[in-house]
Structure formats: structure tokens, C-alpha cells
Image 1 (cartoon, rainbow, N blue to C red):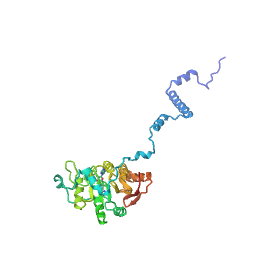
Image 2: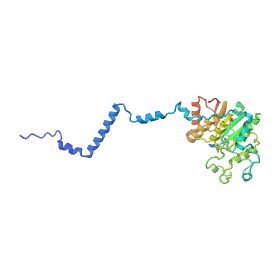
Image 3: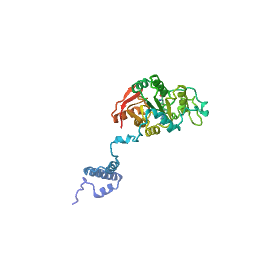
Image 4: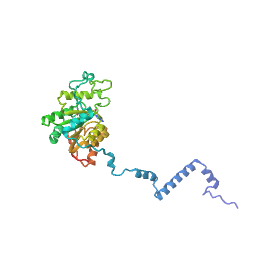
Length: 306
Ligand SMILES: C[S@@+](CC[C@H](N)C(=O)[O-])C[C@H]1O[C@@H](n2cnc3c(N)ncnc32)[C@H](O)[C@@H]1O
């Protein structure tokens, strides 16, 4: 008797045929992957165990915040009355940079007064000078000296004859700044910003109270700290991106005398996704300090950061 063929199940040779096709191969790969994944999950073995262990092993000791800190040890504080001479000795070989100024090669390019600043006459300067009565001010970012000369005039008017203002600036401006200052000469690639700054100081009669510190903010602040130069008031107004502001603030606080005041311009600028504000706020948060604003300026007073 011939049995009727049961078509509910495929024949063996049909199964073998199917396994040689592409869909079968895809199904096989998917099932293999799923099996491996479920097995690993069941055994609680995260696939990235090795990486996690490596990160753990290299994690620095102490708080994450330590990674942001500048830890240079500052020299013993120089008495305020010796700060000007210390800077002249260390930077200018013992002779005031205003002696025999301007040099012949630059004089003919300078204007007797060429001043431009941003927020350089804000009320914050008078408010803080009245409050702190500073003996030493360090300004980080001076450009043509508008805010420095304004502070010098204020200290004179308020009877603070001894106040010294150290102006930290590389006096290079920024790439392309002459697009807006076409009248400033370029001599063999030198923009003469330092000399025009000094000429402005000479014209305003402030050579006795303002000294340029013509280096990059990072290296200058580091050296001032090493030489034991401290300030009662430090103004930050150099690079306006987060990294510059962050570095400048953290270095500046090292030269601030305990209880001194740190302040700066452009708290509200949009540059670098509000880089200045992000740096100021992060610094204040980490050190549990309060940020105040005065016009476009930020102010952190009574700073005691060790
Ligand atoms: C906005 S201007 C300063 C204006 C000045 N405070 C005023 O109100 O008159 C910024 C200055 O910071 C200087 N600067 C920028 N980055 C610097 C850096 N890393 N080191 C030194 N100076 C820097 C520039 O040369 C420029 O003169």
C-alpha cells in the first residue's frame, strides 16, 4: 500500500537545500549573536569590564577638582613698597622701561595718545578702589591702557598715591586686531602695542604708578607668584574664551592677598558660549564663593583660596 505523503513537514533534502541559501545564513548569524548576548547578560559579565578596570587603575588620587588646580608654590610676599622695584629688577634689568622712551625706531609711529578700551570706565573701578583701597593692583589684559590709566587717575583722586598697577599683557592684541586699528603701525611684524600703551601712560602722567608686564598671562602670573608679588585687587580681562579665563582666574588667585578682590570684564559676553561666565561660575562653585555683578563686570570679593 502506498502511504500518502505527509506535507506538514519539509523533507530532509529540502531542509538541507534551504540551509545553503543566503536567508538561512543571515538567520544563523542573528541567532548566534543573540545567543552570545543572552549568555553574557545571564552571567552578568559586562562587555567593557577591561576598560572599566583600566580607568579605575589610572584614576588620580584626591578629588577630581584637583585636576584643575594650579599648585605652584608662591614665594614669600614682597612688601608692597618693594613690588615696583622687584618687577623692574626682574623684568627690566633694574632700569625703568620709561627711561629714554620712546626708542628712535618706534617714536615716529606713535601717537601722543591713542586710547581705546571696552567698559574701561565702568563704575566697578571706582566702587572697588574705594572699597579695597589697594596698594597693588594687577590687571591681566591691558591693551592700550584705558582701564589701567582710569584706575591710576582714580587712585590719585582718592589720595592713594602709593598704589602700583601692574599691567600683564603680551601686547600682541589678537590675530587680525589691526582690521579695527588700521592706524596702528606694523614694523617688521611688530604691532607696537607695548610702545603705544607706554606712550599713553606717559601722556597721562602715570609712569610712576603703572608698569607693563609684557608677557603672556600664564607665564607672567606664574612668575609674579614665584617672586612673591601679591595684589589686593586683580582684574581679569585678557582672553575671553573659557580656557583662557579659567587659567587666568586660577593663576591670578595665587597672587591675591588673603581677603582680596578678583574681578573681570565681559561676564555677559556671548563669546565661546559664554566662556567667561562659565569659568567664573565654575571657579566660584568649586571654592564656595559668591559672584556679584557690577555692570558688565563680575566681582568675587573676600577671596580666601588656599
Ligand atoms: C579686551 S583687551 C583689554 C582691555 C583693557 N582691559 C581695557 O579695558 O582697556 C584684551 C587684552 O588682552 C591681551 N591678551 C589676550 N590674551 C592674552 C594672553 N594669553 N596673555 C597676555 N595678554 C593677553 C590682548 O593683547 C589684549 O591687549
